[in-house]
Image (cartoon, rainbow over all chains, first blue to last red; front, side, top):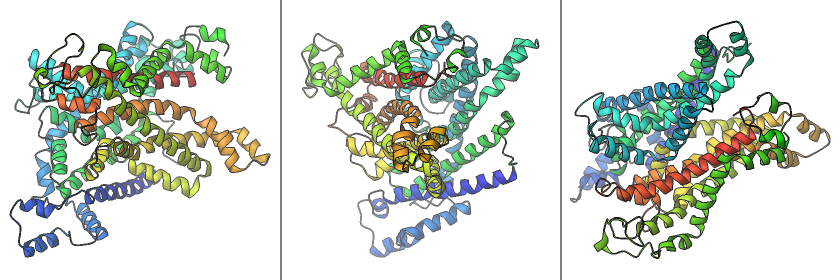
Length: 310
Length: 303
């Protein structure tokens, strides 16, 4: 087990370096000159430009810049934007918004996805199952911003159930609608995964044995079949936490939530390279750690997957 | 599986279809009898026809020119000859939605074909030879899958803006190949160990012949399934990127652009959002159902 964790940590560090290098190259390639962009219409004196370039290491070759950045990240320093504000500070008051939104959506995926999947599997090929399966396919096919606008129009504007914009009303009211929209795709995916794998397990010999031994049906489903059916859903949910955190861009835009996604998009448009790199770095780290935790959880759920060699 | 068995309801004894490995004819037969497949294939065929010959379909109501606009009709609802009404520029919405099919489907198909080609070549080589080639490729795939797809595509498209179908397709391919390649690699890994490969090798077949004639044809099934699903995913991704303003640009006509332009007026003119998203969703639905029904036909376990 320890060996496995060590290997995974090494892989995680390599992946992290690769991803950040990739992001850094891309942001480096962004068009325009950030220093001149900062100055606006009035030209800056050459001396000031040179000073600013030196401060942000813009006059150094690319590998040196990347090295400064990696050093900074290792010290927990995500850099500053071109106005001198630390990126960590810019993100500080936005993280709670995105985190609340993503976690609410994630819990919705977990609860609703699991419930729908189990119900469908137990009512296999009956009306309820068919309806759920058709709805999930539709949910997967419709782009998220269309779902967002429709939900906003129907539930917010016409029925006035929930606020349509901003976070003035706090959790849960302000977050509920965006979270449901954000979770739609995940709920559909999780319920399909749970259904498929639960059906497969319900047909397995050990379930017949358990039933034959006279275990009550509820116990057979929850203790035996469901536990063994959770692996695909856990894989999905683990990877999805990272995606939710990085994928709130559109939902935050439509519902006007001041989160990381909006910061990211604004920074890209304003050529705030260091902010983009900082935000993306943190998102990638979250994503990688979430995946690692999920892989370690497999062993707990399914003893057949053991990380112990020999 | 015989034709008679294939006609039986799918809820039959699951042990029944594991006794014989279905031959290709059986799979095709099962596929042709699957209502899901028939629905999906008709949707995909219809939308492909619309994408190939937009003029034919756009002209059905007599106003087939998407660029014939009259600001006096801005945002008006349906009227005779204009079943979907007009957009904010006063152009016929039906003609625009029909002409939008080509851009979206082109991107979906281009990205999927390019990614699949990369996946077949790299996935087969890595899975077949293993060792350092596999090591490098797997780490590279880990890197690409280490961050959200949309995030990467967004940054690339802002770094290299051009707004053409080709650049958007290239960007989405850059982030689309890893998933397909990982799948191909893992299927090749399992096929490589099978007896007929050993037999082929013992008979003196070269590696190239083994790969082209035996490994790829037997390992490509799951890839085809995922490819069909990928077309749908890519169409959605393209529309999302275009909606964010970094995908296709006007004067191109695409569903993503129409939806992007509808966002400010959708509360007063919901039809601007409704029709493009309806066509987009139905197309995506077609490809997803196609993938789903192919998977069911190829993998007898998933019923």
